Amino acid sequence: MAKIAINIATGSLQKEEIIVGIDLGTTNSLIAVIHPETKQPIVLKEHNAHALVPSVIYFDENGQVEVGETAKAFLETHPERTVFSAKRLMGKSYNDIKKNESFFSYKIIDDNTDSLVKVQLGNQFYSPVELSSLILKELKKRAEHILKTPVNKAVITVPAYFNDAQRQATRDAGKLAGLDVLRIINEPTAASLAYGLGIQKKTNDSELIAVYDFGGGTFDISILRITDGIFEVLSTNGDTYLGGDDFDNVIIQHWCQQLGFSLEQLHTNKNFTQTLRIKAETAKKYLSTADLFEDMIDGRPLVLSKGEFEELIATLVSRTLDCCAMAIKDAGIKKSEIDSIIMVGGTTRVPFLKQAVSDFFGKMVNDKVNPDEVVALGAAIQADILAGNNKDVLLLDVTPLSLGIETAGGLMDVLIPRNTKIPSSASRQYTTQMDGQASMRISVFQGERDLVIDNRKLAEFNLTNIPGMPAGMAKVDIRFLINADGILMVSAKELRSGVSQQIEVKPQYGLTDEAVEKMLLDSITHAQDDIAIRALTEARTEGEQLLKTTEKFLQKNLTLLTQEELLQSAAAMQALQLAITMENKDLIHQKTEELNNISRPYAERIMDEAIGRAMSGKKI
Ligand code: AMP
Image (cartoon, rainbow, N blue to C red; front, side, top):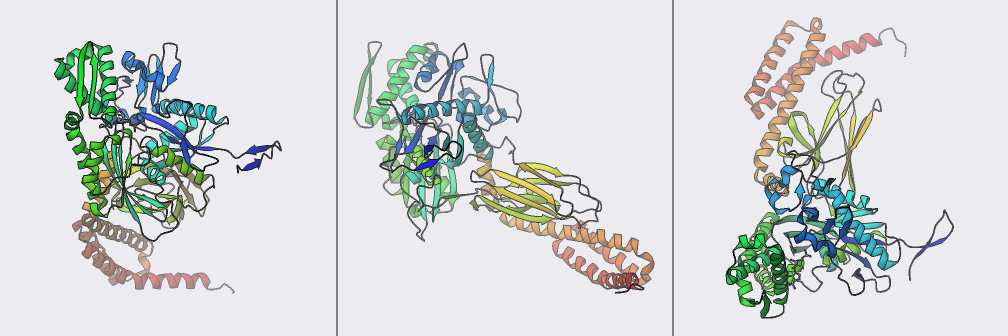
């Protein structure tokens, strides 16, 4: 039975609002919902039409936009006005994509900076967010047409390796398309959900899942651990420029050799190339179920046997297996521990590939769910959970990297550790280091290393107008709030004065996916060094602080100290300073303690005297 609700503004009855699941893909996108009667996820498609909407946008001379199958036809004829693979540009700067620029046939603004890229089409400039929003708008329009109801809420999937900038960009694209994006979820998480993994009620065991996603233009492998409905991405690997299109390309090259064509000749004959490309893709798909493909081009035969095709793609397939091996290594697990292997993406329909993956993992792969639809179906399941229709399921994501702030000595102070379930919040109090310090710089970092310099800076802001107070008096409460999409809000409040400030973390752009992965690996490799550096830095900071306060105390109370106390203090301070210069942690600790032992008795004496003076003559 469908749920009903009452609109309190109008008093009218209204149907429960629908939440759709969207797979916003590099090559194709699609939209899915939970069927109101069967309660099963289904992809939305017009009668007789394909559910896949090619992620292609064509802009005509008058600025009219076409999205999907019709736009795809313009890829060969009007490449400069047809945008494909906009997803590859999400949250990226020109510097990020520079080395792959030749991949794009449209103009990407070359401003050689770290600011976000724009695409030029005629006289107009578009951001990747705007481009993606056009695809989302088209999907929304189709869904509304099919469901005969407005669609305003969605769950959108992104690759597991997407960083904050790319996730935020995806969310913005949704907003621009008129969608309230309730959740951004990882594609492998969605695929696992579609296979019913992680949905079962509480089990104490965790499951290890490998999600092998080979689409039209990209290859990803993700290793997930699911425990009690919590999806943890242990590692990701892949090749963002390897896909089913490369299978088409090796077929084209093979046929060119057979026909005696050079690749240069292909470049000059666009219509011929397009025909050949279409035939290559047809052959590839055909050979998933047949043994021999035969056709004609310009009156000449085009032939490809299954065996020849498999030979042509063998090295491409083995490249994906190398990525799998690396992902397994990074996840710190053994291949044999993996419980299920899930196949995602149209390319995984190739039987040779399926077999190669099964052989590699030593286990049959899961391929029951349509590999083109599996991610969108999973997104629809997540949408249903968010709508509260599936109360048995607890579905949580975790932060992939630790989040923290820089403290004295350039140390990383982690507020939200890696693998924390989100949404989540944490707060901690900090204080000023100097007398009268009126502002405090708060630098937010993401990463696993002990020194912030080795981590990734996400944001920085100044908490200003802190009223003048002695060092250590101000109480600054720093709070991290990470929402369900993994987007971070940082706020700082000086508790004595109430001065406060907050920012939504706009991640710094220009960090490649490889760099994020490297950060995780580095944290393991450098763990020993980091511990040593942290210990030294902490010792140094403590020592320096003690030197500063002792010096201040001595200056203020010079007349109240004995000659011996002064000489002893000066010697101990010198020894501590020397230990700091020598960067000898144990010596710093020892000298800090010595100085403390010397100064404590006279500091206490002077304090007592001061209190006594203050109290004398006062009635209680
Ligand atoms: P996706 O990005 O997941 O939509 O993947 C699309 C890719 O899958 C394209 O390269 C298609 O040519 C490829 N593909 C679709 N069906 C088949 C099939 N039956 N056999 C081989 N490749 C296929």
